[in-house]
Figure 1: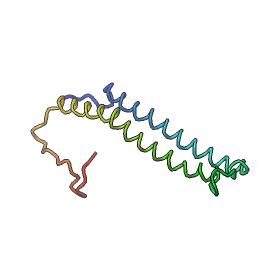
Figure 2: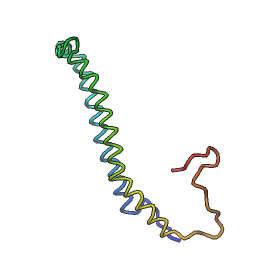
Figure 3: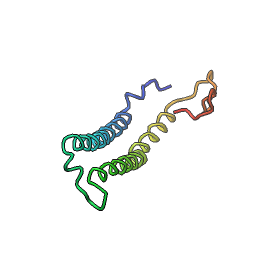
Figure 4: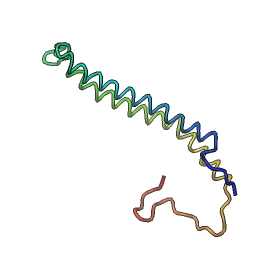
Length: 121
């Protein structure tokens, strides 16, 4: 049986880097845009009250833009995970399963948690 820990695998480190790198960027972008909106609302109300179209002001447009930023960030997160992180995780899982030999004293576990009936991670 292979006793090497998964955290020692270079592909595992690559997987963690891919998750962290994107998570940091997405967090900085989302929080930064929101913080900019709050600061503009607090310290530049004249700018935020500039009319754009009819009763639509710059502040209202930027506030609604927060939803767009969050939606795009969520969409890009899912896309990034499917294209970059999931293939690494699947390859690492397959490699670990190939390297591990089942012990005769263990019973294969169900992919479902017996207490709740949900798939386990």
